[in-house]
Length: 230
Image 1: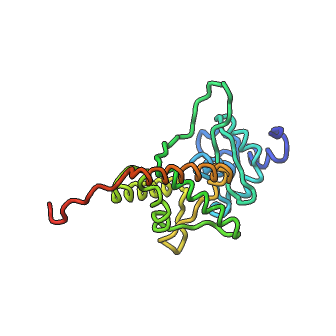
Image 2: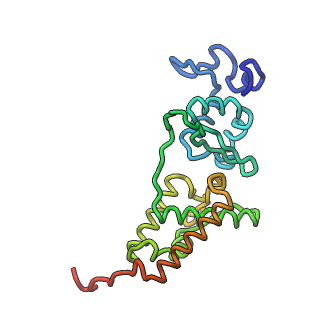
Image 3: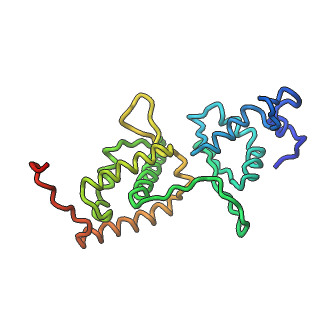
């Protein structure tokens, strides 16, 4: 954290006086662009240098003061400078009884498997120096391995996969690619959430579960009803 009279702090708070009052009753210190970067981090799920090209240099300039503001909310700022992506997470406060600002969304088995798959695609794309992109058909084909482990019929499994894809889209883990309605980019944020070692270990565990379910016949699809029945 830098002193309040440093050049960095003055850049973040903008010019003193009325010029820094943005609306009636405004008692804030931060300049307009710094506030916008802070709001993007709080609204989430991330601040992406490519998608938020005007905010990224602001965050780089004012990182320390943004960290300070987030710390006041018991939040930590995580930045991947190489991929130009940043997001917030709950700070590790130890035994301190601190409130949680961020919402937590429980993950289903299919959600977890999908996250692993998307994280693997990020690793593969990084090795080629590319951004990771997928389409729903590719996802469904890869996740079919876990159909028996999910313990449901084929139609029910596909519905769960589609629901999980929609969840990833709503949380911006999957982001639309301009000019291509059928493919989605995988957010680099996943790299900060799961290390390559964690992904490998979890993938081996889940594949073992899928193999065991297949060997035991778990989740065998029920016969379809008579097509002619109402």
